[in-house]
Amino acid sequence: MMSEDDMHRAEELLRNFKGDDYAFGNGALGKVGGYAAKLGRKLVVISDPQIRQIGVTNIVIQSLEREGLIVVDEFDGARANAPREDVYRLAYQLARSEWDGVISIGGGSCIDSSKAALTLATYGGVIDDYFGTGKVSEKSGGKKNSLIAVQTASSSGAHLTKYSNITDMMTYQKKLIVDESIVPKSSVFQYDVTRTMPQSLTRDGGLDGIAHCWEVWMGSTGKDYYNQMSEIAYLAIKLIVENLPTAIKNGNDLNARYALGLGTDLGGYSIMIGGTNAGHLGSFSLIDILSHGRACAILNPYYTILFANAIQDQLRRISKIYSSAGFITEDLTGLEGRDLGEAVAKSMLALSRSIEFPTTLKEAGATVEHIKKMLEAAKDPQLKMKLQNMPIPMDVAAGDIDTLMKPTLEAAYTGDITLIPELK
Image 1 (tube, one colour):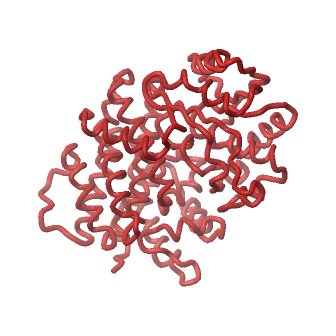
Image 2 (tube, rainbow, N blue to C red; image 1 turned 30 degrees about the horizontal axis):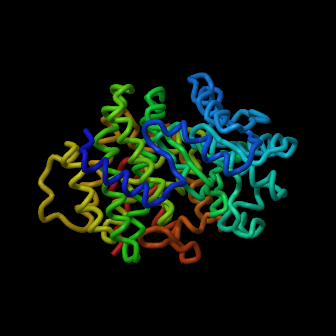
């Protein structure tokens, strides 16, 4: 259950984060028209077919019409994982249409692909030109794309962030655009629309939200934003851990849905303060067998053990959440160092088992070839930011990928945590 204090503090944090540019909670969909009027009169709507079926797109269009705005075209959003082919298709459709702004309605893949397609339609080139950090701003001069994001799933936080994950379906590898210019000008998330989410998406999205918070929190050790990050991450993870099992059992529990919406939104806030790291980096190479949230949920407990000595304060704080939720039954008083890391990691795995998630890569269907692929991807200069965001940054040139990451991934594959090196 979500306490009144937790709810009000989460809402306050989100208002402090986005101000008047974000409408969330009850009745939020009706505010799209007001935001869109600031972009111009002619609009394109991009939405997922299933979102149209449940009526969300119609509610948005009605909000636009009340403002006297015109929908000049409606396009289908991207498939899961935002394949680059779908980005090019959307970019072509946008280039052939005349519009003042774009409304993207859907989950993370729809919004991510809309961010990328709008960039291509506006500035040209190929998608590879924009992978990495700050490449869009080089063309835009810092101007934001004319995009309003309407989120429909408690998961990625794509409606709030500067990230766009795009997938090469030939290699099953994700790559990342990171740029302030692709942050939507305004965002909307009416949490009760998520009651139609299937159990699988509810599971994946909730654990994706935890991953956003935990990875940034781990990596914030010694940073000037550590205290800020600690409050945001602690509250977000608490909301998700306490309410995810309830939302899975009863999708119509609107209190649980509201809590998950707040928690995963705070995950979006987290990744605008600092960056994700090891879990997300590995997940980019597993899309042929695992959803993003599921991959992060498998990998992060093992990286928690690897980085344990650098995240003692975070471990002590987060252990209270998992203890209160019943996933830690032992007394952790006096535990420290790696022992504390292992106890917290086991509680994370216990949460996964409680919602029928796999807890090892092998159980999830990965092969040794996937490990090789993850190790190779970690050496890609375009993903260097993920190595730098780690609590103890890894250096490709120093051989850290082979000496630190490889045995940790082997532990995640087999479940044998004794394979994980101990970092001082």
